[in-house]
Image 1 (tube, rainbow, N blue to C red):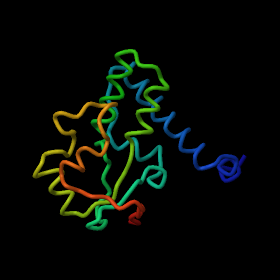
Image 2 (image 1 turned 90 degrees about the vertical axis):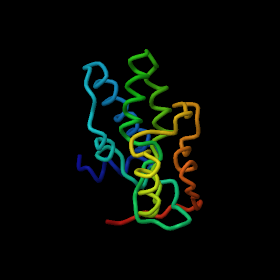
Image 3 (image 1 turned 30 degrees about the horizontal axis):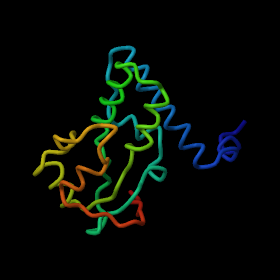
Image 4 (image 1 turned 180 degrees about the horizontal axis):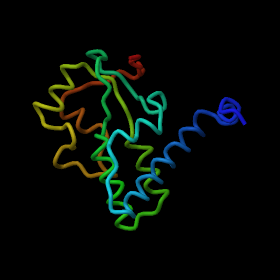
Amino acid sequence: MPVSNVINRFTDGQLKARALRRIAIVLQETAEEGRFPHSRFFETLIPDTWITVGTSTNGPGWREHVVPCAYLARECIRKFNDGAPFEEVVSLLESHLKIVNISVEERNHLDFTLGYKNRMPEEWVFGVGDPLARLHAAGITLMETPAIIVE
């Protein structure tokens, strides 16, 4: 069956749910093998349009994950290693795998001035804390309507 016919069988919500499950499978199997995936693997499995949630009031210019991918992958693998159920990790991915569009200046402040390129604020707890905490710590305010950067 051609791919276009398969895609038309599913809603965007169903496709997003399937993509999140595929990501969880990769993380689970990577955990079982004692390895760690490259943080860019997320980008090959889920389109930005399904996880983009906002744009900075200072405008777009940089595509930023609200929780850094390396951090998110590490925490999901830790959850699997600690015996978390598969669906719990899928749920954590659903709530933490999000993209915002921020200005280049905000990105530099977030990643380099504050040092949050691959980490979250010290007091933040995965699965409990606000996924937007590092953006809040950087003083980044989001508009409600997302804007997608076309490259």
